Length: 185
Image (cartoon, rainbow, N blue to C red):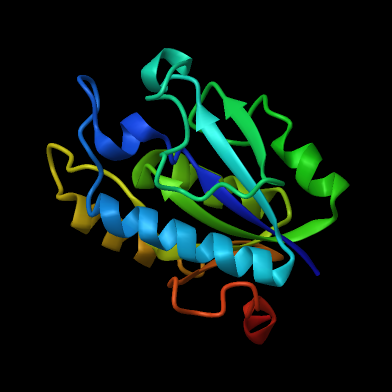
């Protein structure tokens, strides 16, 4: 089964914060876990795809770029998006389908927006999804702490299904590229 690691909005200003963005919760751990899962993707022969949000840092400059602490594989693909949904008006779905990808491992930022939307949309589009539970982050909201938001999304997205395809939440230390979805079918 062909697989891909989808790293969403792991951009400098979103992770570190800026004049318009608060830094994400446990940013050092997030970068560390992204790098650990990139290594696992390489070992599994999975594609690595980064998605960048054009709204971050005005879509240009160092703040827009992928965080410098992330080890970007030389064969990684980079796709830009102009909305919350990584699949909306981007070549992402076509790219994944052209490579016969059936399983996506998803991580990045920001939990209640781009991560939540990508997980839900991917299941609708026919992918089984593994959300890396300790591999996505956000900042505090006016209502909940970032930690609460992350825990909530890990709970509601674990087992989220669209008939034939669903998401499971696993952690960086798990064998992420050995999908276990068929154990629950």
